Image (cartoon, rainbow, N blue to C red):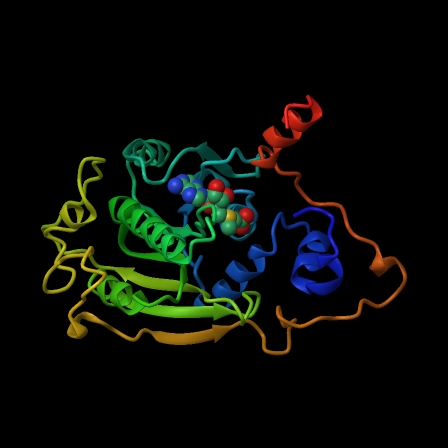
Length: 298
Ligand SMILES: C[S@@+](CC[C@H](N)C(=O)[O-])C[C@H]1O[C@@H](n2cnc3c(N)ncnc32)[C@H](O)[C@@H]1O
C-alpha cells in the first residue's frame, strides 16, 4: 500500500496504515474471525499467498502473541519475498509446487495444521474468462495443499470470486468439510464478486491419502476422496445440476462500521495528508521496469 488519493476515499485503506497493517485485507480476516472464532485453539497455521503479510500479522497478533509462544508454529508462503513478522516463518515459494508442502511439513515437524488460509490472487491478465480460470485453479491448488496438511476437524478459509461455477466448488467442499459457508466481510467491497469460503471441520474420507504430485491432474488428485458422484473437479463446463450446492451466505463485520464502498470526508486538517505505507513492497513487478527506465532501456 503506497501513498495514494485512496487515503481520502477508502477508510479501510487509511485505517490499515493508521493501525499498522500492511494491507487493508487484514480487516477482512479480523471480521471473519469475529464471526467464526477462527483461531480458537489454533497452534499451527499456514497462510498461503501471504505477501505483503497483513493476514500473517493478524495470525501473529491473534495466535503467536496470545499463546505459549514455544508451542505455536505459523508459516506464510508467497511467490514474493516478505519482510519478517514476529512468530511467522516465511517461505518464498509457489503453492502449486509439491516441494512447498514438504517445507511446511518440515517446519511443523510432521504435525498437521489446525488452520489454513489463502488470500491468493494471480496477476490479472484482463481477459475475464482466463482470469476466472486461473483464480479457480489457484483455489484448487490451495485446497489440494490444505488436504495434505490440515488435521481432521481443522478449518480452511480461502478467497473466492463468486463466478458462474462457484456452486460446484461449494458442493465439492461439502464432501470434505462439515460446514461450508460463503462469507462476505464488510471490509470486502460490496461491489466486488470477492467473498471467502469458510470451511469448518475437515472430514476427509478415512481411507483417502492425498498426495501432491506435479504429474497428477486435479481429477487424479481427488480420486478416492469421494467428492461428488463423479469425483471429477474438471467437469466445470457441464456439471450435473445435482452436484451443485448453494452455500449459506453470511455477511460479517459490524454493520455500523465503515462501508468499503462509501466515500468519507476526513475530519481535521492533518487527516487530509497521505500516510506512509507500513511496509514498502520488497520486490514489486514494476521494480525492474523502473530500473530499465533509469538506464534508458525503455
Ligand atoms: C491479495 S495478495 C495477498 C494479500 C495478503 N493476504 C495480505 O493480507 O497481505 C495475493 C498474493 O497471492 C500471491 N500468489 C499468487 N499466486 C501464487 C502462487 N502460485 N504461490 C504463492 N503465492 C501466490 C501473490 O504473489 C500475492 O502476493
